[in-house]
Amino acid sequence: MALLSAVTPIRDVCFVGIDFESAGVRQGDTDVPIQIGWGILEHDEIDPTEFFRRYLFTNKPITWSASKVHGISAKHLEGAQRFEDLWPELSRSLQGRVLVAHGHGTEKRFLGQFPTHNLGPWVDTLTLARRWCGGLKSHRLGDVVTGLGLEAELRQLCPDS
Image 1 (cartoon, rainbow, N blue to C red):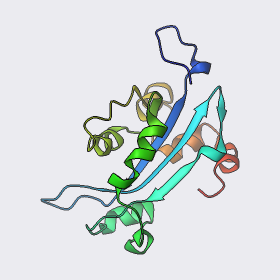
Image 2: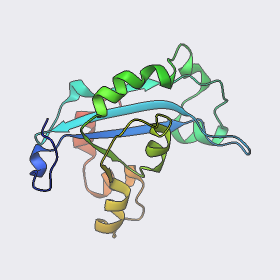
Image 3: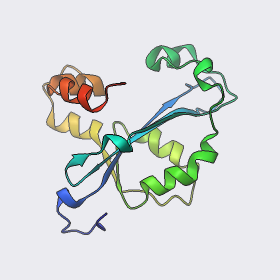
Image 4: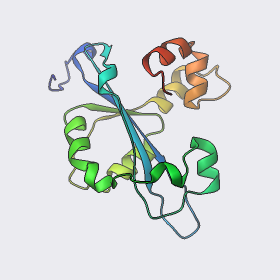
């Protein structure tokens, strides 16, 4: 993995796309992660063997609205490990890489639970889509994929999604 500098060619940058799903927010409570996933792009190639997806234990209930969005229920979390226990593996996978997320606020907030993480820089694909894909009816990730005609490529790379 190349170290980043102001002149590092983009093809030499290692990107990690990361996404969290959450339990949803209840009034007077804080949100918690219940699933994490990531994939790695290096040297212009996505390595499907590097895809990672795991449910995360929480003792907080999943809100109805959150479950409607991502389809995760308490049953999915049975036997899941705690986010804190996953941190060593997550940290090794993310260190020294450019982090990519669609609307990166949630990812930054959940990773902020580990104040010494020193991760980044970040690329927010939602910001990029709003700037460069203005003709789309929405900038939700699925709509961006459809609008750019990437469904077949996505199905090939992520057949379980």
